[in-house]
View (cartoon, rainbow, N blue to C red):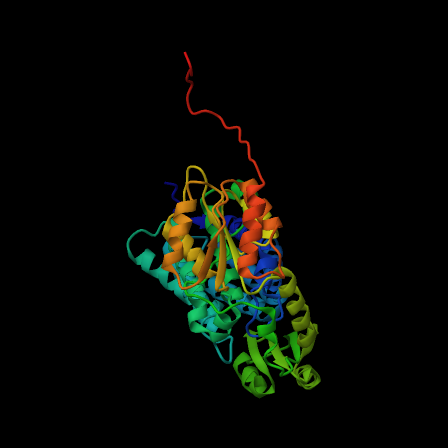
Length: 456
């Protein structure tokens, strides 16, 4: 097993450059999860833009020490922070930089301590921290890193594995902590984004950069059954969202805590982060002019951004409708490989389970996939004759309505998906898909595992 005792600033930079590229692969998927604090569908994009700014600044670091690179990345994240999630991410980087201050290189124990400071800083920037968000994920991930380092094995890969595993579990649990996620049928978008970054960093440490080019990050499923996820649910509140107002304020002798107190009653989702000379402000308000006027009296304003969240919300609803045309039923498919998973996903599959000829999924695997989707009616495509029986056994293990379309090959599965009618009911679709798969004959050519002679 590969081990990494220490890394310096150059590896720190390249590690998170790889993680940023990893995040880019799923930014749009993370956008689609974004329902808190406002369902405006930009969380993944904002985190990606923030990380790009961070990495750009890392390449301008005055030296290659871990301390200098981490501080440069923190500065870059602050200057380029976008949206609620981006500003929180900049705070995480600020804490990491503080934890690595003065270090030429760092160990797993050093990283665990830096992650603890990152968690502390993330909470500190918010006037009203909410659990079930990226805050919970960074806190629980940092606690796992601390526990791993304290166990005596502070190899960087071991610490990061513990961190990523805890982040995964934490993201899956976010709907249990935040009702808006549970009602919308999603996990927290910011938490998913942070998990993806940490997972990308771990893959870099493992030496998997080349493999990352041909794979996609895991989108985490909730560990509890979710309410049906429908675009219409998100329009239940007719209260206007107002304007997402962001700016960078430069001057002298700023007190971020006092500024946060002054702005608390002027809007929602307030985040004020920075130091005595530079402060980043993010707030959701119905009167951005009042806030801009006040801030301009304190110093010089830069990167002023005012976005109409009601328009963003409508765009998000349209995106949801396009991504989820069928809201009362879901399709789960067993598939081997990321490429086929992407193809089936584009045809309407809500969740895929890894499996195939030599890697049959268990009943538990299928049940977990069923419970992770928001719909109460689920159609399963086994796509292998050895998996059909397992799929049928799951029917008695869940309260959801299950139909197994006994597809034995991927071509049969694709034919069944193409026959799906978004306007038809559950039973009719099962019949249509069964009929379509029965019309497909599949021929496979495979390589023999050994030579043999038949018939003499």
